Length: 218
Image 1 (cartoon, rainbow, N blue to C red):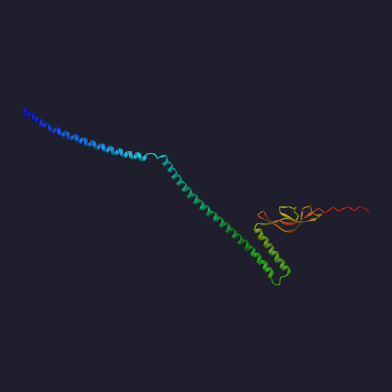
Image 2 (image 1 turned 180 degrees about the horizontal axis):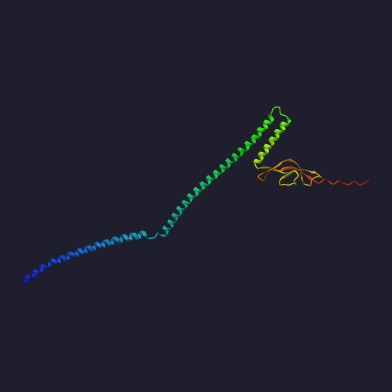
């Protein structure tokens, strides 16, 4: 009987060994799981650390950096716009200078033509008084046309009331035929250019005659 009991005990021992191995394997798996959890927790802590808000000083430094970048952009924009404005001003100055040169060129071309006619009149052979007079009248008409083309108009003065805006009085003369301060003589014509006084007309105006004193009968 005793022998059978020992055999039963011997048969039970291998099962216990298998159970221990399984426990060791499970314990080993638990250790691996713990290591993985620890690794994940470490990574999570790093992410939390990176996502943590900047300190007040770092926030201020970041704001200053952003402002500096903004100022640099504004400075670049300002310099580009200033350069464009300078170029625009230079173009205007050049165009104005070219316009003046062109206007003077056209003006002088017309004056030269008048000079040509005067020279022909002065150098004409066998010229008579009548032909000279006709030549002078032609030149005078040509010059009047030239002034008209340049928007230069003569100021009407003779027979007009004196106007200090258009007339310059050189003398006064007594006159019974004209009202006082009427222009009765014109020394030189006045002209306007586009409505602006180019030269005042130099004139003589009328004044009342002095009253004669009655002589007492002797």
